[in-house]
Image (tube, rainbow, N blue to C red):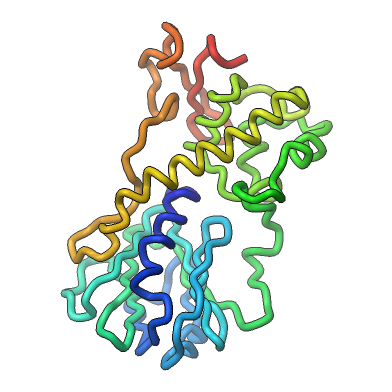
Length: 269
């Protein structure tokens, strides 16, 4: 599943081609994604895209009529192409601009979404979200306060969107490794000092991933491009059985909350 850095890079990738452009039409070839694509998105025809935001793993394309909300789901991808580019399998939605471009949404598994948010209203998908991790609203004090008496695994705790949005499986593993915290420890058993470190490492691993993803921005405007996950050096994620980069131990894995979790038994405690 695309995580926050991949979604932010998607926003960065499409913005130069769409921001300020007028929507000519929206072509919906497959209306049944995770939820049915609402007819209201057609209200944007003839209107310019005034802003493109990201909230958690959602992209919002804002117009004077309202905002189109896009979620990539498990396998969704966006690319900017000439509107006459032949349609491929799983190309479910096109947002076509008056200057001949199309934002094409491809999603083989159809777990993504195109939703609608009227002006001055908040869609229900945003109702219980915590703060953005790269803002000052996300801080150690918040983690310390929310972790009290929480006996859930700390990895699941920082992946809870009510605590902080966008810390997916990959980056939770990486931040915990850098903080020296095993993912199995209870959230309530982490010291205040460790939460200070964990907060900072969550911010740095996400920011680093976004920076690395910036090298793929050109892919969003290639007809044959396949933007999505981008290459990056990961310290523990996906490295079960390999040697730790920081010591001689072997990376281990355990299933926590139905997700594979990776850690170094020496560096993390």
